[in-house]
Image 1 (spheres, rainbow, N blue to C red):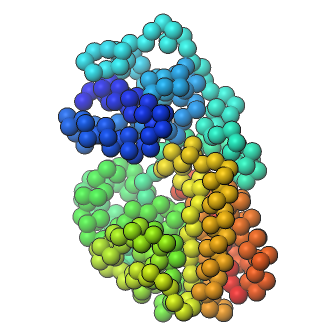
Image 2 (image 1 turned 90 degrees about the vertical axis):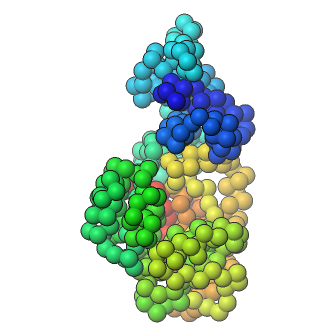
Length: 382
């Protein structure tokens, strides 16, 4: 596919998303019908689509129309793309701009420039204060690719050297001792020897920092209560050099965890019903995902106030449930990939109000300005 044909494909996919199709579904359906598209074509089209999703409001303003074509015009205008060359009408390229299209559009201002839903802006600003504009701006751009060095398989210098042999450049990131930021060759990670042998795992730097902030000591009994795919469980197992139990309300989310643990040389034991009490329970609860909207921008537009209320009720219920699984003197660690106060500090304050035997420990907030995703961590003891 030519660069112009990729733009046209992205515009068509964006129209499907605008009509209500989930982004991944729209991309998958396009790829199934585009057998001519190679892996680089699919990756480029995907990048276009996600770049627009991060800037859903501002690209429509810049392009002069809330359509896939208009938003692709807006994206190119924002990023300095060659509109005339890409909208040429040649081959499978989009048709040339009309005089009306060329005259339409303007730089986004005010709420449009923040690329946030109107209802969310006051909450975003109250949660982040003076940092709100910078965080909103960060969410309009792609997130870096990060790796976690698996200390069960090697160390940081060995990981960097192994990645370099496969054309992947990585550097140490200050958020966590095991964190590497990939600066070149990110698309080749899954084919690299370092990845295939379990020396590195894909994991955001702030997610690694959350694990690094936990009071992990060899011999502890540890439970990852909302394990999902198991990234934090694997990271804890590597630091503990011992077993970690993993639980999720939907066990299907953990289906790949046994294979990942074998590759990593880690001992992670999926459990359907945690029993007894633990020295440490981590609950990385379901949340808005607002700290990770650079990676999952569709969530920014899908979230509404009612959905946020449901999430907060779920978070509170999980906190109450897991509090019974922590032994006296143990630690309950509550984490979200959210930057919103109702899911973070307010949730912990409410829990402490309901449970007088618990005391507040350290709280940590990570924002995109720190380099990784937005995360929140609270450590509670009793």
